[in-house]
Amino acid sequence: MSEVKIIEVKANILEANDYVADELRRRLKREKTFLLNLMGSPGSGKTTTLLKTISMLKDEMKIGVMEADIESDIDARKIADTGVCSIQLHTGGMCHLEAGMTREGVDSFHTQELDLVILENVGNLVCPAEFDTGASKNAMILSVPEGDDKPLKYPLMFQVCDVVLVNKIDVLPYFDFDMNKFKTFVYQRHPGIEIIPISAKTGEGIEEWINWLKKNIAEWQKGE
Amino acid sequence: MSEVKIIEVKANILEANDYVADELRRRLKREKTFLLNLMGSPGSGKTTTLLKTISMLKDEMKIGVMEADIESDIDARKIADTGVCSIQLHTGGMCHLEAGMTREGVDSFHTQELDLVILENVGNLVCPAEFDTGASKNAMILSVPEGDDKPLKYPLMFQVCDVVLVNKIDVLPYFDFDMNKFKTFVYQRHPGIEIIPISAKTGEGIEEWINWLKKNIAEWQKGE
Image (cartoon, rainbow over all chains, first blue to last red; front, side, top):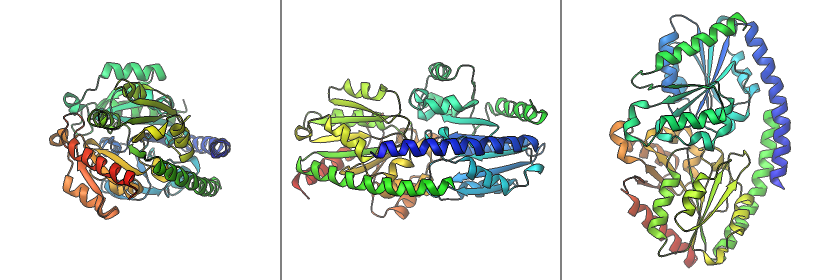
């Protein structure tokens, strides 16, 4: 009984969500603001990667950050310390962000003045993949300790993302993580997707990630 | 709009779920079958810990394992290789298990003949914490690479669990994980909860975990 109920409601929610997401995306396109939706497991290194990304880009563009968390605000405080605009979105126990909540966050910025807004989604490989937030592009972080079999177990996440950052490559020697196997699994789910190995801790690979981001922001602003 | 809808539906679902969960728990008590609900992030080491647990216990008790996954059956196949009864529960994209689904899984075993059923929940620190599965006890695994701040970010998970296994302590030297800080954060959320540091890879701490499990199974079967 309850399973059927959930699915029906979910279909309605997803439909309404898609409408709000498309509207938000069109508006951000007009305002030339690129919205990046950053997803990943708890502890995969989303905030650390974000801090590195901000330090590389904040002198050449105006950035805003939305930190989605169920309860705490420790990530938003870390981001605020870098000097960029930072807000905390509390989901009130919900495991993902919807486009309506994202729009509320965006509304609290003057997006006309921002080049890049980064949304750090709730740490979760399942639910955030189901809800279009209205982002220009979706990125995910998978960290080495999580294992190379994750594309098999959480396929939707890999399908909806435009780029996968493989974080914590500095600890590759201590884990049984086969990068070639991982890439094969990802390409099975999403042929041609960009995969960038990084270490947010040591900075390895960050330049390639920043180049990917800058290229995509430039294309978005040119209207491509 | 859509937020309000979700919450209402969720309340109904949770109420119905609690009813089914309590019924399942009473039945398992009569049948003297202990149901362990094992939760944790993707890649925290649930399956590896499960394999170690099975190898330590399978000669002294009858075990059944339910592997919940969104799509794949790689974990269930690994468990089946150990010789214990193993089934795969496909959640069809859902990010957690409810009591009704758990009962379906339990029904496919002859639980009267089993001492221990372990449910490996979907890899997720958010949603599984909200749904009572009907388990005798809840356990969670948090791995060192995920970071010591997770109790602040995913408080409900730590509140609903009876024991926390801190896995991958063999890689403690390579991560900024402060065990004392972690314990303090956990105790703030759940005073007195059992915290057992382990390495499912090297076997460190596994004996303490097995002792915890055996003690709890014995108490359950005695009707305490």
